[in-house]
Length: 172
Image (cartoon, rainbow, N blue to C red; front, side, top):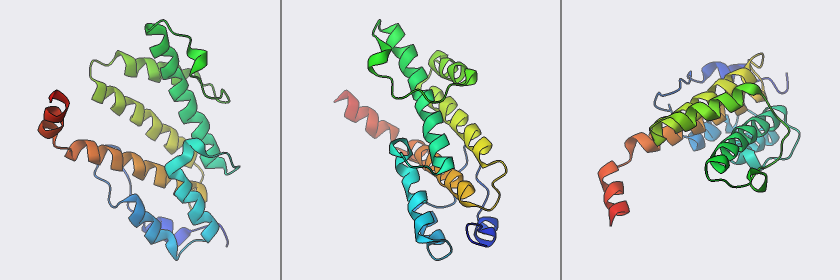
């Protein structure tokens, strides 16, 4: 059946927030390469630039709307603390959920910048879980998986960074 990738998806390892990614995004694309259509591979590749996506693929479209709304809430909070007009920095307003404002405010209240980013990514992860619900073996699931893999890869870079080297570069 076209568009359903039962074998591929059932062979993928589970992803857990905060865990080490099982493989890179590039390796994920290689795994998918001979198992799904070229069009679907292209849509999965677009996950890397999901905020710029303007097409009609449901998972990418909903992800862009959610992440844009989350970023807009952060803009409103930061602009308010600096007494700036947030409308100058807002990007599109097609998705508004009350919990997004709460998530942004919780991240802003965090005393640690790193912990604030972790809170925001946990909200993103939760939203991806919601987007994947009911999509067990289709393209939407693979896109959500790819986006989660990108989140894990980001935290892997943060966790493995040489913090003393970075601090010295900033101080010098």
